[in-house]
Image (tube, rainbow, N blue to C red):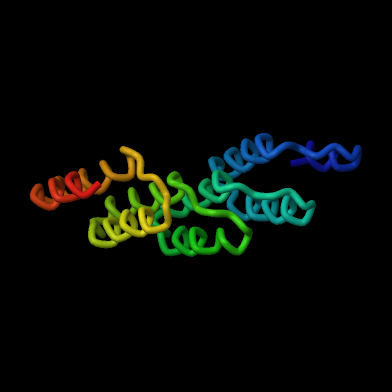
Length: 147
């Protein structure tokens, strides 16, 4: 982050890709507060976020068992003018499935299709796998037929 401060002093601003990498490093080293500060700094400098940057935070919260905050972030993306993408939703779906919240995960799949977001094999297979793991193979087959 010292480097980004030095860059700003020279009127050089990091690209979204560089910011994304810095956020990954901060989140990976358990520096959530610093990552949020950096995100706010990006916003104050007029740098737009994209869905992949917010997805980093959703993933971090979800993998730490704080899915509620991850879901809140997913809903707040619109506040920043960002349309959630298949990656953001798949992170949530996968977390819901790992917590055996399969009805909610299925609901998210339907919501994605209603919003015009194309499903990918990962999002659908997460739900199918979740149903199979709890012995509900009939439901898994139903999901496969629907999607």
